Length: 116
Length: 112
Image (cartoon, rainbow over all chains, first blue to last red):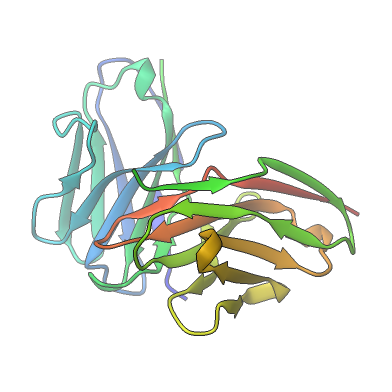
């Protein structure tokens, strides 16, 4: 089946630093990738939809300058949390869809970000 | 606003018990429906999906779900759970466009 690799799985950083999270589709090309944030005991909240070669589409309330998304190739999307603060601490999950119209998503393992 | 509601946050069952996890959504148009599962320490993965046709869909590991359009529901069932079914289960709904909305998840613990 389709495999999505997300790295790192866990990161601890100081307040004010930036953190980059990578999401790779290992055995397929992903036209569309999604970035989610999950708070404890809550559902996955979509942050943005990333299409290869174009700007990401951010959900309402998500700061574009805070959460920079780059989808430079069909197998890689990155999420950079800029100037991270403790309130950015969360679990971030990426997923990838085979085609722009595909409804099935393949998920990465997630990244636990802790900002001190 | 579109939403997905999962009725139980935590469910504890003994092995061989029957399982039903509720899922309701709020959207009046055409939907694609999913159940995803996350086993401890693993990725979220697709358990089953409904796009069209027979409203009773079968997924992996003996799970099935029934789409009842009039009730806006897509409940997940399994006749006899196993210890290995311990996981978190997410109901998800996709309406128009690329956005999929997830429920809050149900943590299932099966006692051996």
